[in-house]
Image 1 (cartoon, rainbow, N blue to C red):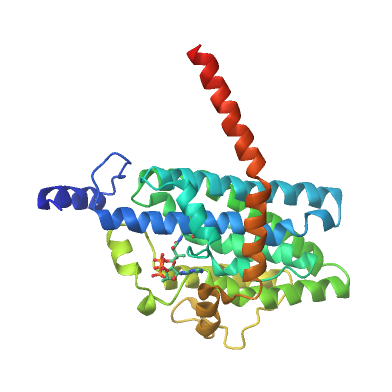
Image 2: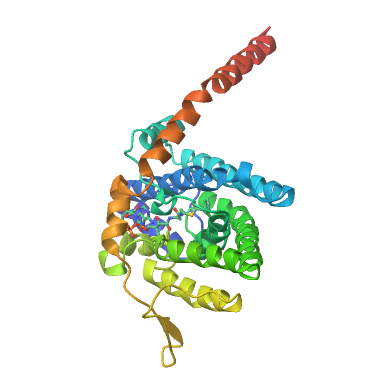
Length: 311
Ligand code: FAQ
């Protein structure tokens, strides 16, 4: 790669300028972005499944309308992110093939089952909460289309986080059985949520280069710590307890100390061995196959329009 182009690229990144689709960029930068952005898009699309599972069983019409809107938002996020990835020269069909064939990664968090209504509260509160923590800094990521997609996505995630916390608040303030459900959901989603930030910094192969290119603006451990610091008081405020016996406020650091994440569980989920990983992939492939007629109809319609314009 030409040294002067590389130097100019690095200077622009260092000056916090956005890199745009037609600008010169190192091939490795392009590849890293395609990797991260497509994994992110896949996470949004697979992320519709755990909550989609509860739309028909929401406890009231209001809860159902809100959940339906939330799940649709996630589908929209996937579409922006696939479009943004296409600006790097990736073909959407290839990305989707990679997901369906099991080659592509998506967030480990979506391979856990949603057993009760309280899980819908826990996902909004914790999973969307962790997603925002990671995505707010990405509004300043160095690739322009990704940064701009994050602005709208973060606004929507922030509504999602509030709706989840509000469900938890209602359950935690409800009957003894409802409070027990809320605590059980927190117990099951807490540790997987901490895993969303990725492996520890000393075991994160992509972090150093992505930080230099300003694709990532914070490290995995920095964001995980921030999430713990913000979320623990939220649990306390509604009378729930975080399932970590080692959790303790550290006065000197001004942060919480917390227990060790089970990284074996994380790596197993990354390898596709999460508790409901197979069901998730089956559901995705079925949705894709069932939707074939829509894609065919849209293509036929576009062709008809083109023929009419040409005539
Ligand atoms: N799950 O070197 P690093 C949402 C992989 S939010 C699976 O640290 P990096 C919203 C990683 O890809 C969730 N794999 O990697 C929503 C890499 O593998 P590779 C999505 C993981 O990229 C809410 C390897 O481990 N958010 O969907 C995970 O520098 C509610 C080594 O890791 C984003 O994608 C994991 N948790 O840092 C939807 C945010 N962690 O590719 C519905 C954008 C790591 O080398 C309902 N992404 N791996 O083979 C990022 O910020 C980064 O990609 C990280 C990972 C921080 C996730």
